[in-house]
Length: 246
Image (cartoon, rainbow, N blue to C red):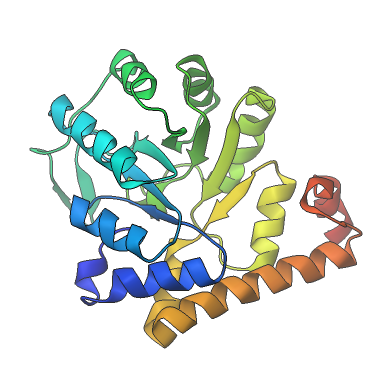
């Protein structure tokens, strides 16, 4: 998540507090060290995703800062190498730049924290993430902000999960809103699901309490449907659930 300052001065701490109270975690995107610290100060577990800056020293600096401040994991986007798409405009091309897999492998080796590669949409990229030592991949279209005609993350998920075969943890986001959405993603092999857009809406409706209520409602719906489909715990959720529901 990012763009908190565009909402209000308190949006970051409100959202972080709501997630913490609901027992969830916060994945932060672009932003400075002060933003990371404000989130950590609420007590929520923070994952810091670093952008592929042209200056490699800036990447290492932000990674080490996240580690020193107490983030529980770090990672990098691989779908913003040539700037960010905002509607019909491409910007930040002077800030972001391509980095090769050798550099990414060195970055992974330089930290003691679990490293997540975000923006994976192909089996080839998933296999490469396994090869260079990442602990997890996030199957994501970046809310369609990278390529607006990319394969939907849910469609890409199945082949990726099959290919990596539990050699790496697979996460997924983009387009998930409800507990039943989460159940479908888990049934397809994801280990966790992100849904930033709904969290922003929940914050708009009720600030910190709104975010907490959203997570609790999603969790309650997930638990209800798991019970209806005979799943006593998350490890029992598999592709057979989708067949039952259909």
